[in-house]
Amino acid sequence: MLGQLTNAIRNAFGTRAAPPQTGLVTMCEAPEELPAPISLPGTGPSPTTAAHPAKAAEAPKPSAPVATAVGLAAGAAVAAALSFLAPTDDLTDDEVEEVARGIRCDPAMLLAIAEVESAGKARIADGRITILYEAHIFDRETGGRFRGAKDRHGVALSVKSWDRSLYGKAGAHQYERLEDAMKLDRAAALRSCSWGPHQIMGFHAESVGCRDVEAFVTRMGRSTEDQLDTLADLLTANKIDRHLRAKDFVAIARAYNGPR
Image 1 (cartoon, one colour):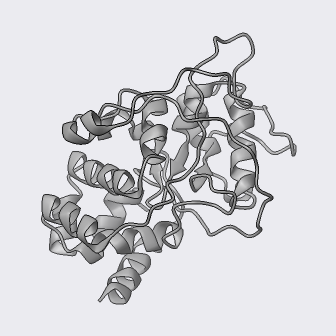
Image 2 (cartoon, helix red, strand yellow):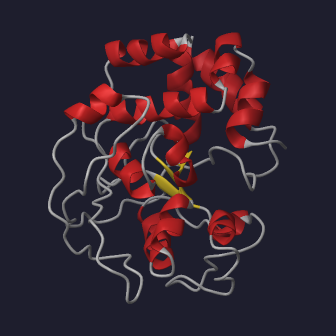
């Protein structure tokens, strides 16, 4: 059943010509290389979510703010560090079924979305959350102020229209682009990446109940159940859950990733 649903969603998603300017989520390929392990700072404060108040109450107390090694804009105040570390736990069948019951859909539909978006990978080889940096979204988030800016490899960080050639390799390379964009505008850069196994865009932070994008990123790194809860919040906030219940794969693809 999961294989059939995955193929159906993948085929529907494949009808799109390109990631949209305003779509909910963008695709992410599996890593092409294994980067060397790195040492990362501790996590920042946990988010407060409107959709899951009980989970917010159970969240661990935030650690003291520390200076992060990457991504601070020149002259900006030091913000709470983000480790970007992915959860190390694996989803259980009970957790998937509980979230599926909450939005009244087949549990396999939730698993199929993760399989299509990131081959089910919640983390890259060095332990960080799977991401994909979107230069056209960064351009939109910053009003085009940084067109012409390039990353450490000489590739554009901000462009008006989507361009597949800008992606480069998956995995650690996406964090290099994120870090370089964060030096220009930290929040906009975080909002311009898709995060986790379901590749949810950072600009949806508030719509999934987080106070800001930093809280969203922290939530995505807290547990795989939090990642699935975030997907459920996104689906319900944007009324995509009804398409999952109907197993209308074309409508799911159109709503989840934008129109053709």
